[in-house]
Image 1 (cartoon, protein in one colour):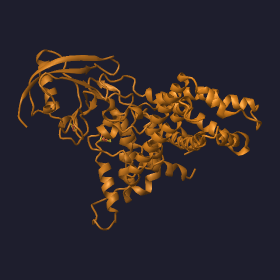
Image 2 (cartoon, chains in turn yellow, red):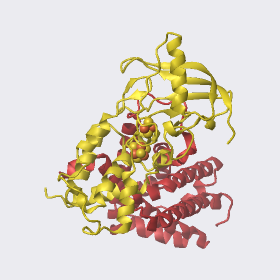
Image 3 (cartoon, protein in one colour):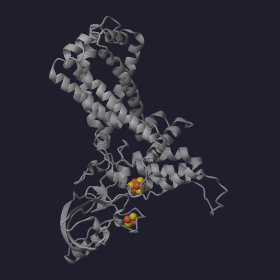
Image 4 (cartoon, protein in one colour):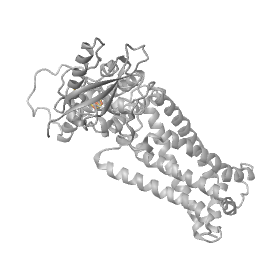
Length: 254
Length: 223
Ligand code: SF4
Ligand code: FES
């Protein structure tokens, strides 16, 4: 890919705090390299704002290598921007052309209230995990690989589900602001492994209850979540979650 | 975990939608099959026999109560879900994700369902209500439904409204059929292709079958 520089207009959501109404502001940014990442472009813009004596844009980020899930930005109508299976930090400026206007919004969902500018509070996800996304025993040191036989298909599907980085893009993309893809990844990941089996019923029931309490919507299987997920979590996990839920609620003791 | 908790949870509500949806799909098969008798082209003899059985036999009439119960549950739960889901995003996006990530009809189940409901009001007041009220709502003698169809579908606007109603139903089914099975937990790779093709096939066949009925009368393909 040939390197080029570009001038852009960045239209960003600015909101002082969670009670502020917020509005869009447009900023010109010049001489952006096509090799830069999207967050580096925002860094350049922020330096410019600081020099001009303005408040820099608040945004979440941490690893900048596609594994932590912090970089929540809804770019030009898609969570994490135009590339498939990609996080905002791994989106490169070669995705844009000279003269483009880029619209950046925070995740929109009542369960993810805006803290400031592009930062949203995703602690609802933490509370869903606290409701059952774990196993209650200490697994100790790594044991001999063959001492606990696991069906290869299950191991692969569990691993694919465990890829979820909890970024919340699925919620941001869903018309119902549903957290089902996230939840289904967490439930599947443990339900498919022998270590997760003893608590599988209470896990799914408690996690669904917590998800509802947090104010996420109900899934209607549109598939927007799967299409935007940076880790390509399959929507078939949602069917598995439904299956787990049905089984657990039908066979619950009381 | 009480039953109430199960059926008021987000997953439980979807289960109700899926189960009643599949029940209504089964009804559509019966309805389309029976109505297809008009194409026997025997001046409606076969059709009226079928209609008579459905209207004057106690078993279909009991099932009819179940049908209305299922339909009502589907409508009320569906509308409530739609409203509650809409309330989960107070501030919308400036740029929408649009059709890139999902099919328009999968995002429009509430609207499509409402259109079908409006159509149903018209449809029931065209056929079901006059027929049942003629029977005094018990198992009495019925009106000649074939003749009723013939006269109803002489008006172009009625035919157009019916075809549009069928189209709404078709798109509702195109998403609803697969979605219902996914909600019941069936979406392994093994069933995925089978379910989607069955779903699309079913929606197309049902839409065509129903839409062709008013058209056939209007264009005089049946006598
Ligand atoms: S399922 Fe995908 S989009 Fe949703 S939180 Fe996990 S990684 Fe992000
Ligand atoms: S900053 Fe960690 S995934 Fe983007």
